[in-house]
Structures are given as structure tokens and as C-alpha cells.
Image (cartoon, rainbow, N blue to C red):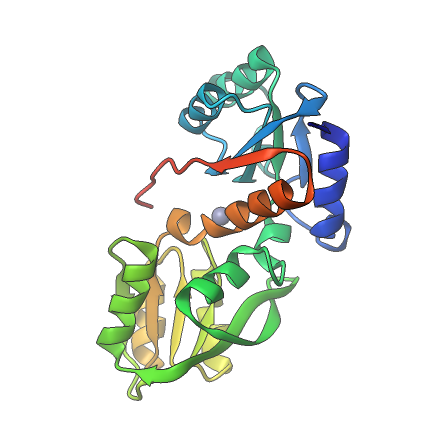
Length: 252
Ligand SMILES: [Zn+2]
């Protein structure tokens, strides 16, 4: 058992949340009971996820996509009210970490993607004002475009959308989880053969084709499952609590 505030402090320090400007609050978003025995992680604090977490006896939930995004209406109605009411009625805390969980060099989504894809990280550059958000590196040995696409789909365990094509075998790569397709031009400037993100936009296809680079959209949800899992595992190792990850599938 751990004090909730101690767990929150530990994560806030580990992810150095004060160093990152984000468009949602990072840390404790909804305060539930003061003690945590069991924490359940997931990608998004959706109603379905909350129900599954509560059924699994969560004292707190840990997610990448929490609530209170800048620009959204601050009123508590509809879907947002239902979600928050579920947390309050069950006295469950919501801990949410967005950009700090993308950029962290070990526990973050991008670092974890590198591990699973087998990429050697060579560097991280700033993207849309966040230091170290766009990762780049290389494969241990070059792969044909088609083999590389199959490899990425295999690791993610789902179909991917691939557009464009590199004239060379794929060796140098860049990647950023989630909705980071807009960083493709920056990846091109880095001179990579392939860029991987979660989502794709209409213009991404043209940018990939006209720059002779392979672009793979692996799914916003699918590419952001690994950070919360790594963080949850770290908590269960370093603190007196248990952790479990619940995947509520999302094809997007
Ligand atoms: Zn995301």
C-alpha cells in the first residue's frame, strides 16, 4: 500500500513534468481514495476503460489520455460528466501523463517503441515546441520496404497504413507515437528512409510520396500502449503496489 500523493510525487519527479509545457494537466487529475494498493493503466480514460479498471479493483487509474484538454469546454456535461461521475462514485483517482510520457528516454512511448521495434536510438529532436519529442535512429541491418512494413505490423499486432516508398532499403528511421504525422517534413529533413507515427492525414500521403520516404501509420492507440505499461511496471517495482494494464482496443 502507498499513499496516493506519494505515488503522484514519484511519477511527477520521474517524468520531470515541470519541464514540459502541455495542453492538459499532467499528474493527479481527479482525486480519489488516499491509499493505492492496485493501479490499472490504459491508453485513454474512456468509460469502457474505467468500468474494466473498477471491476479489476483499481484504487487509481494511470492513463496517457486523461481529461481537461485546452480548448475543450470546461463544463461538466454528457460524456465527460459520466466519466468523472464514475471516478467520483467509486472514489478512484485519475493520474494522467501526456507529453511527459511521450518524451521520457526510458519509460516513454517513443523509447518503448524503439525497444519493441529493435531500433537503436541515435537522437531526439524538438517538435512543435517540445524538446526530445521526435526520435530518430537506425535498424541493426537494412530491410526492404515491404519487410519493414511487415515487421512494424507484426510488433504492433495489427494492420498498418503504409504510404510512399524509400528508394533505398530502410535503415535510418524516425518515429513519434500518436497523432504526430505532421512531423513528417521534419523527419525528411533528418534524412531518414522511413517515418512511423500513429495516425495519417490526407496530406501525409503526398509528403511521403514526393519525398521518397516510407510513412507508416501504426495506429494512435496502438503506438501509445507501451509508455503507461512501462511506467506501471516501474511503479510496481519501486513502490508497494500492484499494477495491471487493460487494453480497450481502438482501431484508430
Ligand atoms: Zn495520444
